[in-house]
Length: 404
Ligand SMILES: Nc1ncnc2c1ncn2[C@@H]1O[C@H](COP(=O)(O)OP(=O)(O)OP(=O)(O)O)[C@@H](O)[C@H]1O
Image 1 (spheres, rainbow, N blue to C red):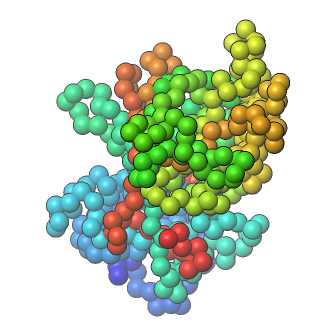
Image 2 (image 1 turned 60 degrees about the vertical axis):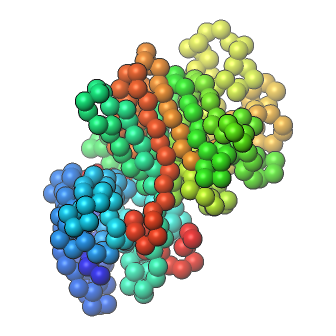
Image 3 (image 1 turned 90 degrees about the vertical axis):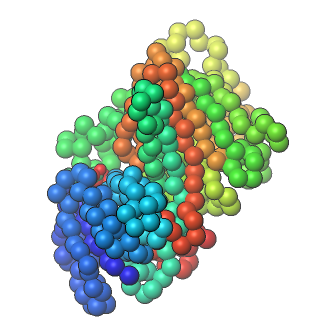
């Protein structure tokens, strides 16, 4: 099987080159792995172009040893999916593309979800996917989320972006949008916290439609039974669920239970693994708060609600405990009781986000850290998809980590 090595020298704290020289290449040499091509990326887009060129000439199952964060992986998946393969004339690769992930980025959401960290900062923690590849382990397939943005005119085709980790709007998309400009100033994950503080009082106005999974239902997490149950608005004949805003948080994930080492925003992906092609969706809507209607001053309402959003996000850092938070009688955020859950934790086949024209920020969409703008009067439609057997993208993991 051909082997391609790619690393991004500027991702994370810019140490991918040194890490490959000190740890990755010596291991490949020790196991007598023949490398067909090595590329140290020189700019955004370079990794995607490299892989496309490589596959056009090889067109067989390929292993890519990738030293980067989630953004470069996203770039490669999208580059491959945007071409037509010369030999087969197909838009999707008919062969398998298997990644060895070497986490070198800022957040490394996919890697830290597949290999939950145990405070192990040693090089061996970062070599787990490579070890799996070297001992001939299998690769776990990636579910992908395809988001289509309606075209800006009838003459242009719709734009599709593919996420292997996260697709979001609302607060998370605003954070990613603003944090990019802080990358130089704050290279680590603190730039996300800084951008969160700037955006936390904002509400986003949009209509939402949740789409069923392949079993024909939208499901919601019930903390009483600690299981997913059919959403009360999703029935046989009419499985879609319509939702009105305002929204504070609207974020869906595939393949991951966390976006950073300790930020387990979709923890049920791990504790209750999905049985069908689906994505996990975390929603916060302030109108579920029992005191929502009691303050008349809208600005004051938003500031007060921001404290509750902050409590949810900080609970996500405590092993994903936000999924158990409820409102008390006076709107206080508590664990236990019978109040409405603060978070609506949904498992569904996809969603539609239809932002209100007047709300600029509700038009932002984040796909694995890349930011898109939804045109006025248009919508984003996100659908989960699983690869065909023996095709598509997968990641080498040891046997005990295999998702299926
Ligand atoms: N040599 C380069 N110079 C500038 N940008 C690059 C280069 N190589 C890749 N990139 C771009 O850098 C972006 C970020 O890379 P990546 O996601 O790998 O790291 P990160 O953002 O630090 O990590 P994470 O996504 O885990 O937070 C990607 O969108 C990629 O296109």
